[in-house]
Structures are given as C-alpha cells and as structure tokens.
Image (tube, rainbow, N blue to C red):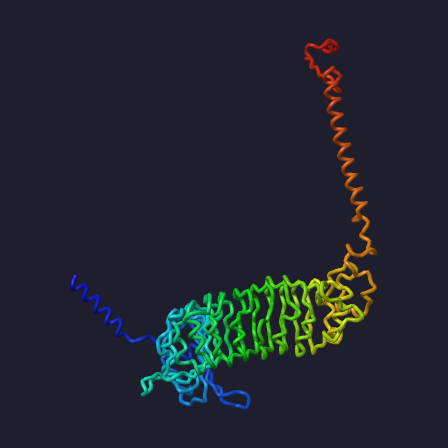
Length: 500
C-alpha cells in the first residue's frame, strides 16, 4: 500500500510541475487570420489576430513575429471567441494596447493575473461563458507589481461580462480598474438584486459612463449603488422586474440615456428630476396602461422617446408635449392605442380649446400598427401637432383607422382631406344615423329565430302524430303492409298445369 501511495504522490507532483500548454505562436498565422494595418488618414495602425472558431484549446504562447509589441500607441486585436478553452490563461506579454475577446469559449475559470504582462489592455469581452462572481475576482484584473507593495492599476476602459452565471460580485472585484473603467456590461446574469458586495463593487466605479444591467432578473437596487456615479451617461435596465422606476436612478444627475423597456410597470411616472435625460426607451411593457399628462414634467429635456409595442396602452395624451418642448422624435407604434387624448378629460375639437398646449418641435411621430379610432378629436390632435407636415408615410403602411366602420382602413394622413367632424364617424351604438345591415337589425334577428322555432315545433308535432297513428293502426291490425305468405312450388296447384 505504501508503494502505491508513493506512486500516486509522485504522479501528482509530476502533474503539478508540468508546464502549461499553449498554442504554438510559430504556426498560429497558418491557423488564424493575421493582418497588419498601417496607420493612414482613415485607419489607425493595428495588428489583428482572429482565431475565432479555430478549434483552439489553449492560449497562444506568443505574438506572431511580425506584430508590433513595444509601442503603446499601436494596437493588437486578439479574438479567441467560439473556441472551447474552459480555462483562460494569461495573455502573452506586450506593451502595445490590447483589445481582447473570448466570447462563447465555455470558460468556467480565469487565471489570476490574466493581464499581468499586458499593462496596456484597453477592452475585454468575456461574454456568454460560465463565469461566476468568484471567477472574476480582483486578482484577475491586477496589473504589475510596484515597489510600493501595490499592484499597478490597468487602463481597462471596457469590460463585457454579459451572459455568464454571476449572481454576486465581491466588493473588491474592480479594485484595480475602478478609476479607468468607462463601460461595464453585466447583462443576462442572474443577479436578482444589486446589494451587498455587488452594490459596493459598483459603487467604486466613479468614472463609469455606460452601465448595462439588462435582463438580470433585478427586483431592487441598493440605495448607495449610484450615489458616486456622477459621470454615468447611459443606463440599461431593460428586461427586469421593476414595477416602478427605481428611486436610485434619480441619483444619476448626468444621465443622458435610459432604457426601461420590458419591465412590468403599470403607471409610468418620473418622481424626481433628471434634468439631462435626452433619450428614453419605454417599449415592450406588457402591463403599461397609463401615461399621465404630467408624467414627463421632470424630464423636460427629452429629445427622443421610444414607446412602442405596449399592447395594454390604449391612450397616450399628446398634451404631454406641453412639458417636452425639445422632443424631436416620438415613436408610439405597434401598441394598443386608440386615442391621442383622454376622452374623459380633454376635448381638443372645441373652438375655445388652448391649442398652444400642443406646441412642439417634433420632426417625426410614428403611429403605425395601432387600432386607431378616427374621430373629430383625433383629427384635431393631429392638426395641433402638425402631423400633416411631417415626413409622409407610404400608402401601404399600417397607420390606418380601425374604427368607426365607415372610416376603416383610411390612412391617418387622409384625415386632413375630409371633414371628419361632419361625417358619420361615431361608433355605431352612439350614432342615431348609423344603420346596421338588414340581417343584423333586431327585427330581422327576431323573425329569423321565430321562423326556426316554428319549423322545429311543426316538425316535432308532425313526428309525434305519425308515430301515434302507426301505433293505433298496428293495434287494430290495419297496418300499411300485409304479411307475406310463402308457398312451396312443388305443392302448389300451378304444378299440375304443365305435364310433359
């Protein structure tokens, strides 16, 4: 047994001392795409090593000999995407600026000091792997060791970690890239909530410009997460489980773009000012049914708003434009919209109506694929916002009336050429002049039902009479048919007529 144990220990020692495996740099350009681009007026100088889908199993051992590896102003672009690596090893040394991608590499672990010999790494994409919060620990992003007993920070500008298995981040995850990171994506990770270590890790990214937290199953965000992000310009929180706009969003005083789409928000409301917000996406909200006139009073600087594919939204009162004087593009397509005013509150067709409330700078209003109810009020709203002066639609598009019946399929652009207010354009139940087809009138329906009832009644009565008579006749032996009697030919009298 002792001999067997010694052999096992020896094998383990040999295995631990065995050198790591790498792809041969001498032949790497025979297997991958190698390209050198010299700087010109339109293209910066860079070297490209594209090893995507090349069945590689390891990191390359070194850079191709004709690559520039000492000039920080030069750039090397390396892609190992779509290779089954499993473990990501340390990149080969270079002082040039590095852009690295390893998407769909089935990664479940990353070597510590991954960029130790690439001090000028600029962008890293490790999306769509199996990495956890422990896999992307602080040691992965540490730079070279300094005499001050500290590791040098990396100039990493962009880090994509979307589509992994990250549920929580350690507090020190971004310790060595906190002051340089500008773009971070944690989308499509099962985060659940931004709290504890994850919140404290994000809190340190004071220079962050773009943060993507889409489809991360988020229900809440810690109140301290965004307080230090005074430079954040773009926030993507689409596809989560927020029922209202998170209060923490209002801490982002420099926010320029906000994507709230595909969240179960029923009533859209901005409770606090976002003075610099210019672009807003509130599309694909399955339960959004209310947009109040004052909804956007605190985001008065909006220039673009995308509010499409909201099937539960039937009314979008364009009086919101009184708060959005700088709005240039509004997309309300593919929803359940019938009105551009609230019938219970406003009557834009009245002569004394204040049309200045619709004053705007709209260049584009998209209304396609909605079940529009084309009435006098809709015509006046479109006139007030200058819809007829906007880019014309193609005749075959779906910006058409669905109701009333008399205007069905009429293009909204054609409403300006008819007098809708004096046309029979009301719903049938409320229009005394509207006549239904003859077969749908109450009298015709009643007569049809009565005729069917009479025919059925007569049929049943006649059937009973026939059955009754047949039984009576049968009882008295007076049936309609006589019994058949059979006689043998051999015994009959006819057999004597012919005698051979």
